[in-house]
Length: 411
Image (cartoon, rainbow, N blue to C red):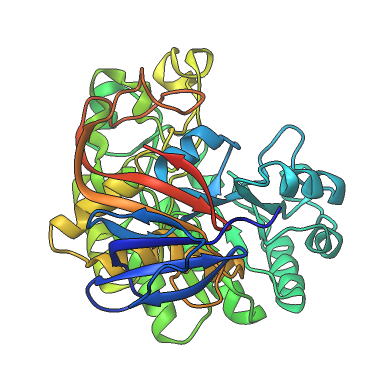
């Protein structure tokens, strides 16, 4: 069905560079047909943005579950699905099924499992999964500790033109740790590992990326030492990018007090000096992507002793408002904020979205950046409300959402 043309008027267009510009946008046959000084055509559906932001729909790079109500609430129109599923996305048929699982009002971009069963031993059928719809390759929640396997993976993906999304934590050093070594972990008696486990993994993978010429994306980089390595690699021209979730720029390991399992993350929350380093890395461009890491977990996974609880948070609904805190704090501007949550992820996935540009797909979010609300784990649209931001007041809410020019949500 061809959607009726839509013109959204009276808004502020979030452009790739500079401050938002007053204007309108017209959506025709699933594409952006015009933006700026635009007037509706006689048969258009006209929507008044009421002075709010007209922004690209968010592209969430690295979710662990297809959770459309939460995605729509958060303004997410595309999500890259991690291969850690049951069974893993290590077969073309599973990748193809995942790619169709959200349509038409949500597009899921599967990330192919790098190795069979995500066991880090034997490469999966990467070319066949690419042809089945995989937009990148991922190691999942685990680091590939065999350097030979990782080099073969990177070399093969360089030939296939696929980005490798990797978990950055040296498994030999991290072991079964659930916290970062330091005063808090010692006080609570939790199994812990030094923050250097991340830097060790990042250093090795950067060296292999340089050797292979592959494009490498670290899904989360959360420590100052690892961020320095990424910064230096970029300066040398190595094709490396880095991401992070809001938990690691908003929270420190102090949140582990009282053994609160909603703060059990992978990688674990860091000390405050590392948290501040993450904010600086977002501000200076070292970090390219902010993703939700959306991983809804019910009581059967979280209502356990801290060391036994599963890591992860339901993050889709809070991704945008928490990113906007960086704008209000003066660390980044709105254009940079939406590049972090939409433009850069779209470029890594090679999808024609994430930016307001004539001809791009009409995935649009109308956002009131100042609308206040309170995060409530009991009222979230997600399939589970395991958020460390429970009862936190935030600002920024999606008021209308369009996927391919069709309105799919209104708050």
